[in-house]
Image 1 (cartoon, rainbow over the protein chains, first blue to last red):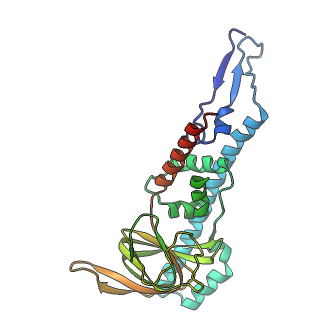
Image 2 (cartoon, rainbow over the protein chains, first blue to last red):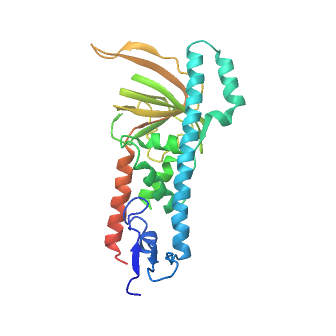
Image 3 (tube, one colour):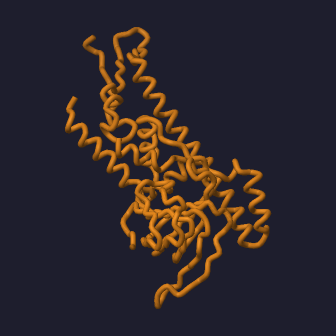
Amino acid sequence: MENTKLITVPDNLGGINGYDKGFTDSSLRFSFDSLSNDDAAKFNFEMPDLAHFTNIFALKDYFKDTAIINLLKKTKFLQLYIQLIENQITEEEYEQKIEENSDDFYINLKAIQSDLDYIALTSVLQKLPKKLSVDDVSEIFGIQQESLFNRILN
Amino acid sequence: MVKHLVGESIECDKCELVTRKIVPSSLQMHHILGRVMKYDCSRNCSAKNLKELNPKKFRVKMTSDLDLNTLLSAESIFLFTTKLRPLKLNVVNESGRHKANEGVVDGFTFAEIKYPMENVLNAIAKRKELSSKKSPD
């Protein structure tokens, strides 16, 4: 076992360092045993850790997908709005189109449920411009603003 | 009364809006208000409560000001309104040099001064740091 290396994933994985104590305390550990015949790495994952690890990536993908969908909805709405301002359609047609295709225009807002959601969101936000305001983030990622404030209070 | 601090908000049934730049942002399915339209206002803007809510009780944010004639004034604000039709705005002389758009939102309106997301993230990180110092376990 002398040649066994232990590799530990950094604690700051997934966003704010030390935010979720339960997550950072149980950081992922896996070992490489160079003496083994097949040179295969032996992974010593614990199931709760692995679940956290996969959840973070799944949640990040979810937020990115949601952002694309919401920006498409916003674009579609603004295109319709421009048509109205340019007098290409009447106010009645504008309202009718929104009423008939409400799923294509309305952005749904959901609450942030857990610490993992929050960590995934901050991780995605780190790659975006820092000038984003809270309402912009709420709009892009479809998040209720109140649920963000609850993170401060709780 | 003038409100001008970051994060302050008003809620009213009728709102007078004066802003140099206003753009419609998106349609949202708000979990309390239902279908709302969001506007982004910037370059010095103000929103004035012209009609109080009936009953006078907050609907969106607990700390919102609900009093008549309260003026929310800031560099940039956003507002939700249940009135989905486009606003009718008039161009008025706001100052000696600049013109502004003025209009009345006739419907429930929630207006709030904008603030950056980074502040919220820093506040959460700071709070976690403090709580971890208190309980080292």
